[in-house]
Amino acid sequence: MKASSVIKLNQTALQSNWEFLRSFFKGKQISAVVKGNAYGHGITAYVPMAEACGVNHFAVFNAGEAYEVYEVASPSSTIMIMGSLDDDDIEWAIEKDIEFYVFTMERLATAINTAAKLNKKALIHIEIETGMYRTGFEQSTIPELITHLKNNTDTLVFKGLCMHFAGAESIANYVRVKKQKISFKKALKVFKEAGIMPEIIHTCCSAAAVRLPDMHYDMIRIGIMQYGFWSGPEVLIEYLNKYNVEESPLKRILSWESTIMSIKEVPPGEFIGYGATFFSHQTMLLAIVPVGYAHGFSRSLSNTGIVLINGRRAPVVGMVNMNCIAIDVTNMSDVKINDTVILIGMQGGHEVSVASFGEMSNQLNYELLTRLPINIERKMV
Image (cartoon, rainbow, N blue to C red; front, side, top):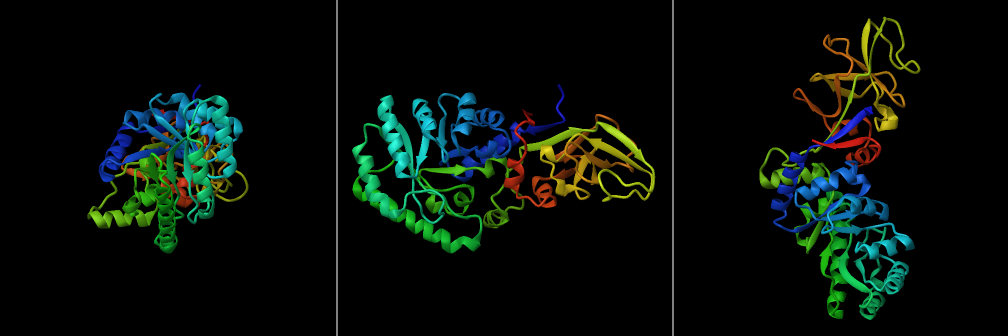
């Protein structure tokens, strides 16, 4: 059956992004962060595409996402869970050699006990609280933590020591980020002096990886950049200025398309759609597109959104419905049913970018992408 819209993922653009990332970060080990349904790109579609680019390490938020990656990834790829896990999830993770963060004594105890029961070691990453105040062991608990790690080498593999920066994308957070760096280095020193060290150390997300090269250590966690976006305008501007280039080397891999399902002529003097938000001052021709707020096309785009049809920009008129939108094609004589409609992407030299789409709907890039419904088909092109 034909879906009302499709999200297309460009393999060539993705390959270009990964070539840039490897070159820019000079061969540093990179974990591809695919939480939030691969930032809306679709885990099951994206992971095989990334593996085709040579990616072999994936980071997710919870066990559900880990399972999705596990189902489509190569057996040689590493999966790392950074967040939510219950007791059953921990058992499954240990059985499948999936690595996971530990940031509470309770989770550590569960990992030890479950590993003992399974007679198989848990592959854990210890997260340190450095000032994000979300998850992580406090500095005061590190001596006790080290004791547990030393006493349970038969059930634990100390795979990683990590942290997360609280806003490295903005200079406004400079002081806070600096304090976090100091805090992590203090914790790391305690581990070194105790004679127990992880296999790898990792602290940087995309923004921190660009702005804090002294914190790269053994691995960096790259999320938004692999999909063709920068963490924020400050990070992009800093990169462009530092390397004296005019354009971002990153390419957007996602486009979102639908088709025209109906064409409607509206006489002058009529309201269009629900309510009275748009009034036809002349005879108008509308293209009805089967995408609405149920599909992630925000209601805030009512009377403000723009799409591309036959290489030209066309405005949304009236209210965005649950399942459809009306597009003003009055001045387009060649429009017909089943013509392609670009909701996000390029056509005929014009572009509706994720950034512009987000600005029109008052959403951040991250928010907009992750809100694209899971049930929209993702297709590699």
